[in-house]
Length: 450
Image 1 (cartoon, one colour):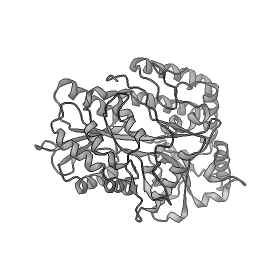
Image 2 (cartoon, helix red, strand yellow):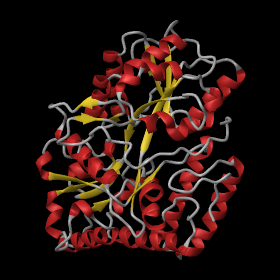
Image 3 (cartoon, one colour):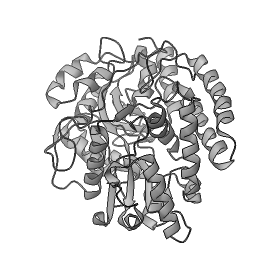
Image 4 (spheres, helix red, strand yellow):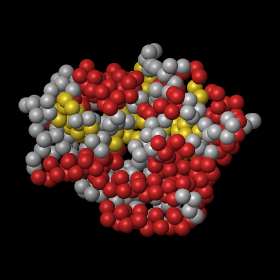
């Protein structure tokens, strides 16, 4: 793989949790990533011997602070300066430093799509991969870390997904005969509609559609794959038009304040909504105080199956890094079961290493683990990855999905003309970056919306 042309990863729908992630099972196996925040956990970033850690995860202040405490507790071989940045800054910083031969960062962390464009800028880590063979990391995840080549470019770190959180008050409006653990999109719409009617016309369903919300991932990894079987190649298909027509109906029974919600756990806690979809890390606080009052549910199924997004994150070392040996020790420390279980407890990202499920796992996290397991083990599951290889263009592609939502659901424009126009803008971006498609779309030399 070259710097700008990552090969399409092969990944099955059960790689997460194969070793038993979930309530009632004795072990965890999984990955997802965190973000980094511009402060040192145990030393100033300019201090000699400090491992400068550039990362795209755990960007919310509370998540960052909790992760910094884990670094301070679990990483003893080196001081770490933890620097969380958005995907665009991550890509430009890594590229500019490595290409100029003036590297200041020694460790990078990001989701698969953050790392994939930079395979040629990353050190081979086969030695670390060999040293971690006893950790129980799934072979398919390790294969992802090769980024389409023959050597390990990143070590899988953590994994995550998105689920539905429902306060049990909302079950009074669940349509008769519907199993909430096996919802279809039509049943979710019926449930949200009945709930609004039963709640005096006030919607109880919410989405993280605020300025920093992850609602575009709902369209990319859940709605469109479930209706079309794809994400990009099917962007303007008749099935996609059906999906967006459905979304328009769902939005009509969604809390209007959703456009202000960056994370759904706060409005759920306040009782502003009783049902919501979001990233597991952004739902965990809602059931924390009274877990018996809550359900965590798998995503719904559509005509093509149960589409869900698997977030895989990894750790890598840039070529020319100033503290390679210490960075490797940090990777080893972050690949210990107890360390990854700390991250699970505190920030709801699931381990990639095999780890015994602790008895003190917060009940809210246990609820999420069960929902994620059901989601992935569904016979009709369609695994999706976030966009891969877009680098600084990732935000522009995400904006296409956000703009489609705004025009269709908020502005009320006709669906197909919106899709046709947005497909042209999407293709203009894709033609520039020239990357292969990512799951669930089929592999192709260059990804485009048909």
